[in-house]
Length: 401
Image 1 (tube, rainbow, N blue to C red):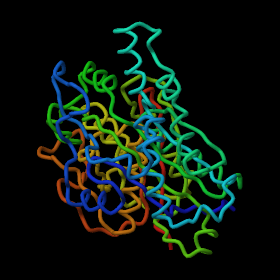
Image 2 (cartoon, rainbow, N blue to C red):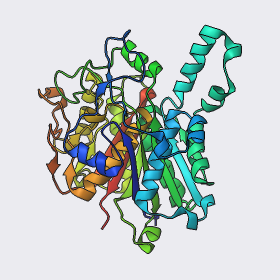
Image 3 (cartoon, helix red, strand yellow):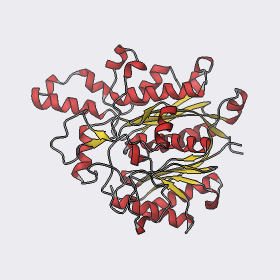
Image 4 (cartoon, rainbow, N blue to C red):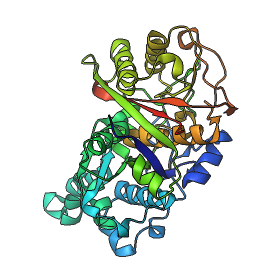
């Protein structure tokens, strides 16, 4: 029999709230975290808004010396991890930290450090580029910095499968725990705002001017965001023994690669991913109560995701909402943050809304929980994450009984 793995801690650093409670309160009230970007100059772009985490103070989680030795994505990741560990009340000092794994997903890594190096190189020459930025830039620094700060000496890995990376990290953590290779898994994602990614999405005309409107007929694109989400995985036996608060049980996950297009998702690939998650979890489509959508707000993504949902679930009007309407697209952190939202939806019996929804679209004929949160008993949830390159990951969780 497969080991039963449960989620016992949640840590969030987002544009709508820092910490589980503030995040959830804002989420179910339909609060938007989209604001005018002030972390870099957007004057050369046609769009100026994003899901920027403006009230984050790294010194609340790290001393100043350590802050200077790391970049922002690591700051966000460490903060979210500490919040998740506190929420789980897991007492790591009493545990064998050689058996605590750390897995994170990201899209850009510490890309801000690369931007700093580029500017210095262009203005002053390559000899002026300092060692500080060079050693901070590598993507593996995020999970390594988390492990170093918390003295966690088990498996350590980064996933760079872009917008699905948080789900990939969770799936890998699930596998390690079922194989008995780790006792606890710290899994999540972290991405910080960067000028480069903002420019890139603007160049491909994927960014909406003011707001993200997933599944709306007049949707104009995604809104870039930043943040970090972390979940604590442990065995059911461990959680029961210490009488932990259990948010949900992780049932399984599905992976697929569209092998189709670098930026456009494919209906067949997305359908396979969701079906694989169901198969791995041993659940039937009719058992699923809610889908936390990838839901970027771009014309093609939303249309493809809705078609794939219809392929798997038929004409059943299952609730499907996108919290990117509030947070923006948090890149490699997106599916980890969304998984935390799924856990809270199960725990509280409330579905988060898709805000800014105005006009129904026949190509997105789903129940998107428009504009207002909905009270509903939730037992089984799918969390979708689809990324550039066609890298897809869907995770299934269930209310613990």
